[in-house]
Length: 359
Image (cartoon, rainbow, N blue to C red; front, side, top):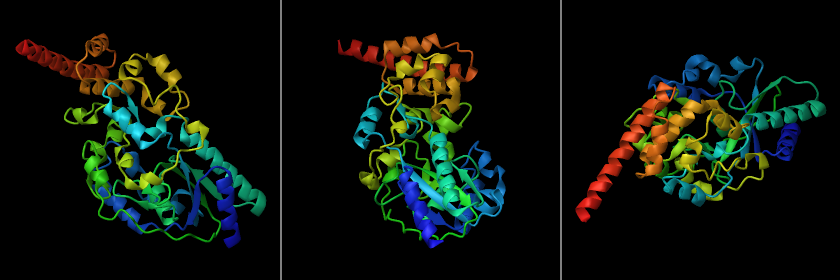
């Protein structure tokens, strides 16, 4: 089993995973942390986080016979933090979380995990397994931490000393009695950069994220109206948020991915807000084909961009674009467009009065 574990790690790297670790299924601390998080209602409308009960923290209940977890990570960063900060500093630019710029990672990683399982089976013989990539009630970060891939940082993302945090995670649940790896210690120290930078102060305490305030939750998971008091804090982030990762000191060790499928498609890393706001539903579906962005649908896409346009400096072009969608068929879209238009018109009026006073 020790030799097989080493071979699995080698095969995993040959398939494009940057690291492979192995752990058992005991997650008592993670289970307690999850229950506390749920008790605080930090999951918001993400009912699926509690729907499966303790299956999430007890792998053998999810896939009977599981005694080990093969945990893998795959880098996805496509551009340096300076480029991301540049986009965030340009209020007319559309910021999309870097994990969603290329091909949907779910399918890519699941296919690689299947190939890894096939390789194990061809060399070892039949064994029980099931592969997951963010597709079932799995505590992937807790498992990856226990498998030695990194530690869970104060922002709740996994951090690796040599690779930062720009990577996806995946797992193979198996009944093979493989030799396990040791967990690594935390190296966040007294740093609070991620807590301080969070635009909505969603990281309410170290290792505690209130999803109801998180920009990623608001722009991706939330199906309805974005709370009005949080809209100005979202800035030009129209799909997800990376601020806590961009600021993390450990990401100076992150490497640009060599995985071509994760490269930005349709110039999604350099689009302007007015460009993407003008996409009709068919254009949206075409430009986001194969991307994780598609899951939010065209209406939520417009909702998010409307908020960003409301946060941008006053512009006659933005005002006209908002007026064109003022009576959108979706009440949710219309409500956010009205809010954005009111902000634009107020800014425009203030600037006009200021100019008149100067004259």
